[in-house]
Length: 373
Image (cartoon, rainbow, N blue to C red):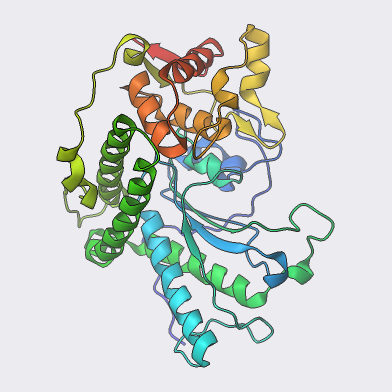
């Protein structure tokens, strides 16, 4: 058995103890692993996180294993890397299930022999990866999870439901992704570019499917936002390796969506409330709503702020919680309210500008953001 070389970056494993941020938003039922234990000081050093939630569920749980992309507000190549390992496990485990032979079956002696069938999924909320990828930290997080699990949070959620084979495969994907990122240098770009290109094709297909469900104007917005997302995802590689001697400057990744840009009407300039810009304040840090605590609800009541319509808004592909999370993430003092509306409309579905502007103003009144003049 060959031993791996020690990577140049620290590869640290933490057990989430559900503690709170130092001097920040209390998170009594949510975590963020090492962030919650040592606070914002360590967060500045973390390049990426790998989070597993309810992995290893056997066939009786009816769960599907997901490798989940990050939010649109935080494009990153790290998810492409994780999916490359998961896709390889998919292929190897299917060969073994179909033929009984493969070089790397990744099967536990007491576990199942079924193929993994991992899915590369769009960003979903509801676990500690929300904390890492919140804009106050901005740490890309690889989220590995089984969902839906019919026994989760019930008295039937027992260790007997774990399939050792599936758990082993999830552990491999997480460990391999972590080691890859820990030893990554600028020379690793070529190995990742083919996988990233394939994933951009998939994202293009998803975007075009959404475009068919909305107006021509909203479809054009989906296209423009998709191009910007893939560009920023490409640039994230350079930011990750910026401290290393081997470094390649790049204008960012291109996408098949670029070829369609000339087929859509030009973007209209922002007007009225759409020109307003908001910037997140240094405090509080972390998501505003977590398990067992809602920072906004508590402070809105004290400030006499009515519940914004956005929090109950139902879009084509998402609802209030998803909209609110990304609106705050996009409030960087550079995007105006129109730009934020356009971005979240791609993720969760078209939403009126006035609904987004109302929420941003409510965040201002509760001290979460400030208006940029």
